[in-house]
Image (cartoon, rainbow, N blue to C red; front, side):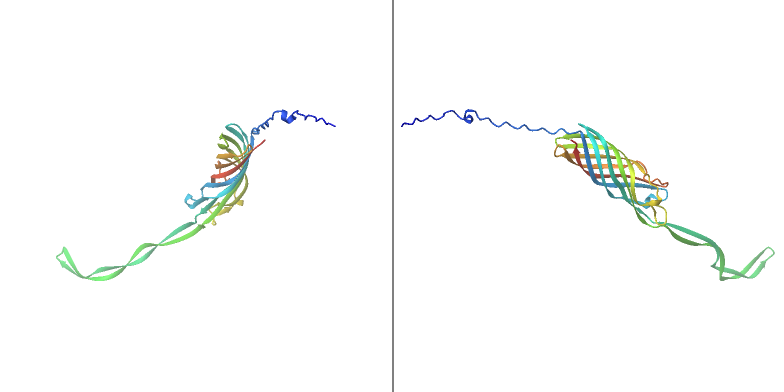
Amino acid sequence: MAVQATPADSTPAPQDSLPSASAAPVPLQGPTVRSPWEVSALVGLRQTNATYRSEHIAADDLRITGQRAPFCGAELMHTGRNLSYGAGIGYGSWSEQVDVAALDRTRTTIRPYWMLVPVDTTLLIITDTLFQGTDSMSFTGISQPSTVNVIRPTADTTTVTERLREARTVTVRSSYVEVAPLIDLHVTQARWTLGVRGGPTVGLLSGRRGELPSPGDDGGAPFREVAFREVMLGYQARAYVRYRWNAAWSIGLEPMIGGTLLDTFNEAGVERRVTGYGVLMSLTYRLP
């Protein structure tokens, strides 16, 4: 019996009949649009430069040596293209070492009196008188060495040195919580930002340590006896350079200066004003 072969299906498979399409490229996402608000954390060291003026201690008797003290803070800024504004809060100390020189008082007492002073001299002793007429006469004599006591004024001088103040090293440190409105001017190039930022500060006294230079015997008065100014007006300014490694985070290096506008002590007779400079590290986060 003959078997008839069925012709093979020559219909091309669907995958063969359709032209192969290349994979569509995945669109790249652009940078995330973030809020103009950013928050920064700062930490670093600040060197104190202090000046003292005292009615009781001469300027030559005071030697001021500034010390480094830590400073930390946080800031919230509304950023624009070249101008930003916001506020910050920080905590820092002003610290210096005050060397007070010893003070001596010398008193000299003069007591006058009289004394006999022997003086060597020669005495002429008359031995005879000769008359020449009625109008003139002459004398004859011999010279006799002798010592004569003469009364002369003199004085007894007594010098007494009294220590009024011992030499002393006094450490002064005052700490403040500082609140500041801030203005910022900056330029941005790629991932780098250069700018300046600053404003006035209002400091609230949070701590104090040390002694106040005084004219007393020990050269210092404890701070429990000293009235401090509780609210301190000041200023701060910084230049900064920041590098942004993504849309949210950046790190920066920020040299700073600052100081107080008022006398730190609320005491009559002693005035302390401080300025300072330092370097801060900053970490900034741009809010989403």
